[in-house]
Image (cartoon, rainbow, N blue to C red; front, side):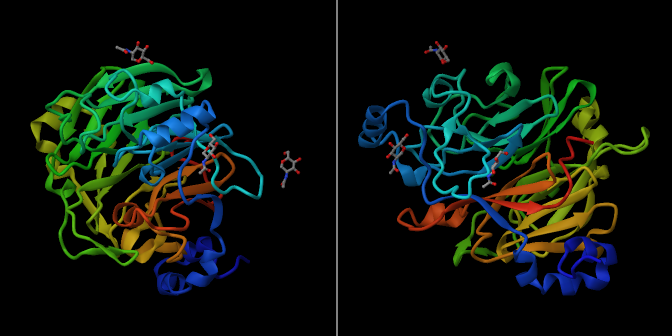
Length: 406
Ligand SMILES: *[C@@H]1O[C@H](CO)[C@@H](O)[C@H](O)[C@H]1NC(C)=O
Ligand SMILES: *[C@@H]1O[C@H](CO)[C@@H](O)[C@H](O)[C@H]1NC(C)=O
Ligand SMILES: *[C@@H]1O[C@H](CO)[C@@H](O)[C@H](O)[C@H]1NC(C)=O
């Protein structure tokens, strides 16, 4: 018999135990392990001289560097570092996964190398990366599409890097202005569907034109879906770490269900806006159908699957159809078995006001662990002089793997 605190047990009993599970945070906390933590982000500089020069010239301003997403592949942890302020020399990096106990202030290694990171204005290199995903072939799909500040004039793009070949560029697709304007676009998160040559479903979190963008690798084309379900929902303010977020925040988190057991069934795409409570879904086949998307008829297929108890950022699905998501205002991570009704089966699996300060990107490893990047969003924006740990990678045992491996 498993412990009462075990979310698997709570999940089994469903809604009867939701209140019990939600109100026993002390026990569930024990399951969260701090894997890495940082008070500021630093890198493996080519030389001491390079480090000091960059500091002096303010090309590197330590407190301006933030982590957003994490993805694990083959012994390495890849991290995206969106450039939300200046002085951020690196936008994609990795750290080797080790079993050392002391994993504080680990130096990040630019990926694939320094050249692909530091050349702001050279549009063939990475400019401003946020969303990343790694498919089962070891290809990293990199969303170079944060265009909400003046740090680059390059068009946004999706870059495919071969992790099994030193991160060499396999493909690079530039989004046209009509889909993702280089002044104002905000490519946020993505999931990868490996059918028919590979698709990416991408959230555009921009205020000027929020929506979901579909990219077909086979067609080398992209199209965009716009619907009110992807807009900000303004209900009440979002308060995290005593700071009130008043910004409108449209569609952010996106998740894809695993390969269904029967060929006739389809996969579902789930999405939610950051400042909203509703989770919506659409059949992946609809997204894959460019003509149908352009007809607008798909809007009648948008399904409201349920209401959450908090606004949230990142989400991810495992190979069994469990959706993990962040409850920002409640400093929690929740789990919903999508085979059941959301409001009957959403459980808190981790809650901790100190540890879970803005959980953002999620990843699974191949050993049954879920990882989440805790990014202290409000600490980054409101208090550059904040002292203490700002970024953490936390680990939680789920005994499941990514939807990618299904
Ligand atoms: C940053 O990393 C470099 C090594 O790449 C090291 O020489 C330097 O001391 C580090 N800075 C701090 C403040 O730890
Ligand atoms: C780390 O892993 C190595 C090799 O797998 C093993 O020999 C070592 O004992 C491990 N150390 C810890 C602290 O677990
Ligand atoms: C842009 O960067 C790439 C990769 O480092 C490099 O090969 C190329 O020469 C650069 N282009 C310009 C115009 O500097």
